[in-house]
Length: 221
Image 1 (cartoon, rainbow, N blue to C red):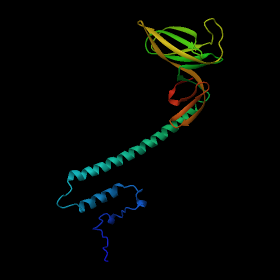
Image 2: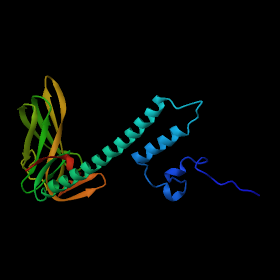
Image 3: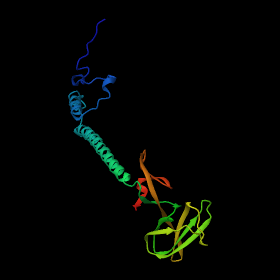
């Protein structure tokens, strides 16, 4: 039985050194290889149905777009690495400092309980403090305030002046203005014990409030 030898006419891509073996599939196709393929494609096109110029340039544009996206992804990856390193250094400098984070829970310690209220608009501000069971232990009128962040400190005494035990307390605030009462966001002050790089970014471990995201830190004391 006779055999027919494979020639470059049977496989126009063989002159480029390209094979279909699995060992070469992991190699990336560069711009030079792409242009060689395009040249062979033009040389071996059907004379009766030649490739239109628009189709030819469309393929070149598509390859250029893919190459540009890959380069952009690499740049973003490098930038993300640099930002993470910068954030790590910043977060490490927080250890031992008190920071302000958004929270509806705050810790009462030797120096009292400190935090802040984000007043959305001018009005009379009221701070309410509840124990772990949700019972109201102290209500404090902070008077008329303008919009902005309002700092506060509670000495840990109830309405009768009796000192309450140290620990975690629930905090909430409202702003009364133009006959309408609106809830306001509250923030708690706590100390940073450590920082760690998690799967979602940098985490800050606080003494009483536990772990919070580094991005949640709004102020450093």
